[in-house]
Amino acid sequence: MLLPQYLLDVIECGTDEAGRGCLAGPVTAAAVILPQDFNNPVLNDSKKLTHKQRVLLRPIIETEAVSFSVIHIDIDTIDKINILNASILGMQESIRSLQTKPEHIAVDGNRFKPCDDIPYKCIIKGDGKYLNIASASILAKTYRDNYMEKIHEEFPMYNWKQNKGYPTKEHREAIRTHGPSKYHRKSFRLIPEPVSYTHLTLPTICSV
Image (cartoon, rainbow, N blue to C red; front, side, top):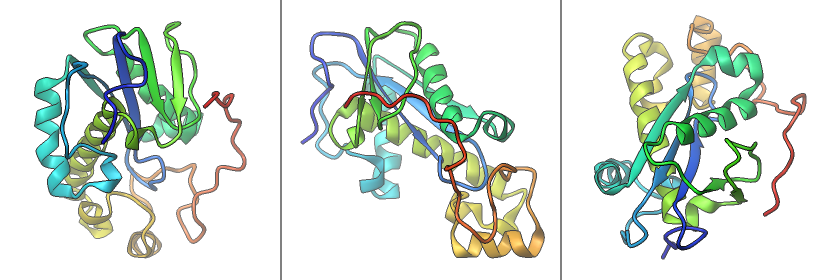
């Protein structure tokens, strides 16, 4: 069972992102502050849940959260500042958009940058350890999935309704056949190689 949050007796938000490894569409970040007595036996890392479970959990999180926020970072920003920095920017902006200011931030992963002088802790696989991060992962995933399903209607040949913009074989073949769309990330190698981050300037690694 997941713990409620990393630090007890403080107003803590969990934050996570979805879509970092995709070839198309935004990277989406969420921040969630839960009541400290919140509990749900199903809630877990969004990657460990079924689509149906994520859909059912989303309104529970939104209804019971003290505050939550979801932010899309568009492809132009991703191409300009790189995907890692765009992911961090999304998490920062989702935190800044919370109606309640957190006293501490629990970040999924091992990279972050300071956000308005709020203390933070990077936690590897935090979405499988703490309910507030897991909740953020579910909101980020479900909101991004909805976005990709919407733009699928405009460009059905890429089958984003199914692959959500991830680099599946089918998706890459569609890019090869039809060329990239306006929603594809120009800074990514769309075919045939997988995305490479070796050229990026990375922010400082957090202590974990």
